[in-house]
Image (cartoon, rainbow, N blue to C red; front, side, top):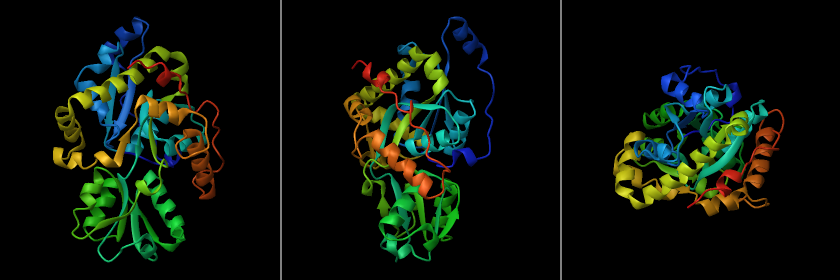
Length: 331
C-alpha cells in the first residue's frame, strides 16, 4: 500500500516526463491519456488486472499505469503533477490538500479491515506493553496513524514509545532482524513481519472501522477538464472487480505476482481488505455522521492531523468528495 500523512514534507521525486507518441495521438484525438499510479496494497492490485485484461481499452480510455515501489513517491507524483490520478488513502489526500494540493476523491476502492497491523515480538501482548519500547513505522504513513490511534486507545502517546521512522519494507525487515520491538506495516509487508517466530498483531485496522479508506484520487484540474476519461477509469474499476469475481484464480495469480507473494499468501489478505461495491461507494459518499460516511471520516482525520501536529490547519473539504462518477456507473 500506501500511506503517508506527511506527503507535503517528502522530497520531490520527479518521474519520467512526457507521454510519448501514443499519448500524442490520443491528445490529437481530443482525449487525454490518464497517468494512473498505484502501489503495494491488496485494494489496488486490481488495477494490474484491469491492465492485463484490456479493460481500460474496452472502456475507451488510454491509461499509462505506473507501479510505485514506494507509496510515498506516488503521493509526491500526484501532488507535483507527474500523475493525473493515484491510489491513496483519505488520510494522505487530506494531508496533501492541507499542503495546498487540489485533489478530488472519485472512488472508494476499499476499506482496510485488518490488513494494516501493529505487530509485536514475543512477550508483548498488548498495545499498553509498548510503553518504553522501540516501534518502527514509515513516518507519516497510515500505519503510523494506526499506531497513534492504538496508542491513544491504550491511554498512551507517541512520547511513551521510542518511535523509529523507517520505510515500510525496511521497518518490516528491521523487526524480523530484532532491531525493533514492534512494527506498523500493511499487507503484503505484514507477511514479512509475521515471519518472526512468535510474533503477532496486537492492533489492526479492524479495531478502527472505517478509519482507513482507500481511494482513486485525481488532480482536481484533470477532473474538471477530462470528465469523460475519469468516468471511463471509474467504470473500468467496477468492470475489473466483476472480472475478478468471475475469474478468482486467474485474478489472484495476477495480483499475487504484482505483490511479490504467493497466491496462497495473497488469499490470506482477503478478509483484511474489503473491496467496495458500487452501493457501498454510494453509501460512503452520502452525507452522514457515522464512521461509514467519508464526510465524517474526513472530519475525524482532519481533527487528528491537527491535534497531533501532522498538519498545521484543517484542510478545506469543499470539492474533496465527488460522487457523480460512481453514480453514473453501469453494472
